Length: 498
Ligand code: BES
Ligand code: ZN
Ligand code: ZN
Image (cartoon, rainbow, N blue to C red):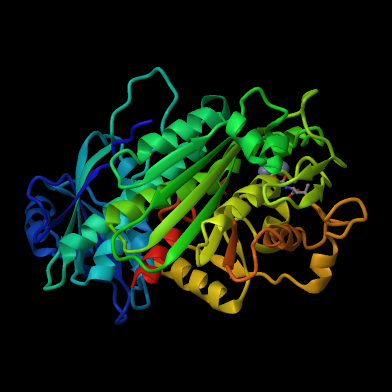
């Protein structure tokens, strides 16, 4: 799969050949005020319409409300106004506003290879990075599996900024991070018949070909031999055999060793405990954790962050058949612990448990896993906020800080003794699920933690909600696959590399 995102560059002034110029409108200070190097465009608007930009904008209903957009009639170049809100602009406001502006730009009726200049009076690294990320993320166009010819609606974006800081570096970072998010979105959006585990594993390898990342793919034979009882059980029902992809990035001078583990169920039918049709619809997105982890490793390596990363993507298809695993089966997992299966639709935790146990052998300081793990997490937190569980509050805080820096939303959930006790069974070392549906996200977290050895810190991101945006687009989030967790993981690596 190849993607041509718009080129992203830094410029001191609004590019003369830009088709669309994005300018802000803020309410800070009372009256609506334009934000950007407006002088250049002001002249052409005066000439064309005999009125100033601001007057024209307000007459056409431009609002200062964050993310609201209005496109002015053309005067040579065309101005697209975006609301920046009535409070001081944070990096997240910036990301969302620019995202909304680019979403509007790609929807212009004549959008075909547009050149866009983003002029918002930027001068510092964080803001330039946020604007750059918002621009690429907002211009995301999903891969279309159609025979009709397709062209890019926006071909180039320049971020206008001046300052002493390393703004070129900020733009480059934005490009790398946003491209990685878009790649994760593409994989998530790919129809499940086109992305079975073997193909997904090849995609992972291909996406890392230019990086200093060693990639190793375990196929079903290697998994069987290696004793990966969880992955083999889950993948057992499908003719599309499972895979475990191991990726390792070892930069010179790194002291911290981070392990990442992603859930890559390329389609989750529920297995023999089959899902009703309505709930099966979104299950191509059940590989979004693996997509995020692979994309994050690529970005971390491309940015040259000084942190050692070993990542695992556990890929399988959960299908019902005569070779499928059953509820009440007992499996011997990679680390030798035995698990009584509670429900074949609780497959994610089984593939993750094997991959986490495998990751632990590498002796990382911290394991972070990412999975579209439970519907219960969506019941608890809604569709936009991910659940965060951790071995200790320090790790939880680290992940919360990283999420904030990346502009993603997570909320910490507890794992209590009562929750842990729900995994007790007389048949095996543990059951894979609880006795009722209460606290389902926490029970799943408690289960995963049983595969993290004492002494290794652990964080768990349940992205069942935010991986897939079923409602309208907002900020820099499109419909469908969102690429959530990529930005948090890259921000985490950046923090650990300091
Ligand atoms: N992939 C699902 C979780 C999910 C649900 C993700 C909705 C995104 C949207 C997971 O494998 C699953 O089916 N979990 C079950 C667990 C239950 C059987 C213990 C669930 O959440 O209902
Ligand atoms: Zn399931
Ligand atoms: Zn699943």
